[in-house]
Image (tube, rainbow, N blue to C red; front, side, top):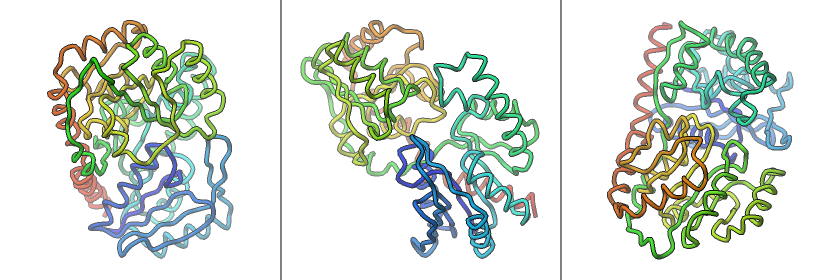
Amino acid sequence: MKIVIATSYKIENETGTAYVSNELANALSKKNDVLFLCLGDKYTFTNVSKNLKLLKIPSIDIGKLTLPIITPDVVIKVFKCLNKFSPDIVHAQNSILNSSLVQTWTLNNKVPLVVTFHHIPTQSIEHIIPKLSKTRFVKLVQEFYVNTNLKKFLKYTDGVIALNKTVEDSIRQIDKKVQIKIINNGLNLNDLFKIKIKNINSSKRVDFIFLGSYTERKNQEYLIRIFSHLPKNYHLTCYGKKKNSGEYLRKLYKLSNKLKTKNVTLEDYTNNLIAVFEKSDFFITASLKEAQSLAIIQALASGKPVIGIENETTSEIINDKNGLIIAKKTTPKKFAQKIIKLIDKDNYQQLSREARKTSEKFKIEKVVLKIEKFYKSITNSNS
């Protein structure tokens, strides 16, 4: 099968969508011909391997955003490339920018289009600015986005991959007819499975980590407040891109100094996940919204119990067997007390084994088979 994967990010971008799109393109290319369309500094076409081709279109960085430069010349080049590749199916990631571009091509060439939403479509604006989600302005912007973009995009889409039931329900609020299949994200977890499950000693240093951009949605501020109530040997390290983190990162440093939390370290983003997870004991999150967090999946595969407040990911896959899930309105002090109580149970190895077991369904090898089957059902119904 000839497949196009289209995303509106650079491969090296910190976001989960960029990472999982790259993983999917590489995994699919083992048995299929794949063209991976993404953003770059300039227009380039590269043969990565026998079955994988990489097409980058020029983009510009504006603050935290990277936007494609879609000029008439770029559109012509992209369409010529797609014509030459002649895909059986196109798989877009989300519904804007490059996804809208490839949808136009699929409509003109009668090629089926599948889309995966990496956010909750009816809450996409809240995803960006969650603390303003209840305001009238955000609701109006969200309604405008749904009515002007999403409805039209779904009308001309042949199939949707929803990461979970929450995403599926969101899509059904917009479109009652489009074919939907629930298929979770897939990741290459093999190296993480090799990390040895250890034990902890609560009287010695206990290491907690969080991976994610320094943004209000990720809510590191709340994590700092939690650790101000924990013993000093309980240490938190946050990893995220400091570049363009701006005012929020300065706010975190200011809060940490005010609370004198010497057991919290704010580090820059790292690609060395093996080293990070090897030296950690728990993954902790206070993210306000997570359609399906890749960092949590990776933590589970590493055998790290996950502690977090309720969101779309934790409510789906975290429980008292593999970690701890805590109500959103829990105060930092009570959250800290629950962490201490969990560690005092002295069942760390059991939690770790269950964490790794939970991650099994997210193995890219399993997920790709489901996606390929969905592709075939779509292409067969369009033939």
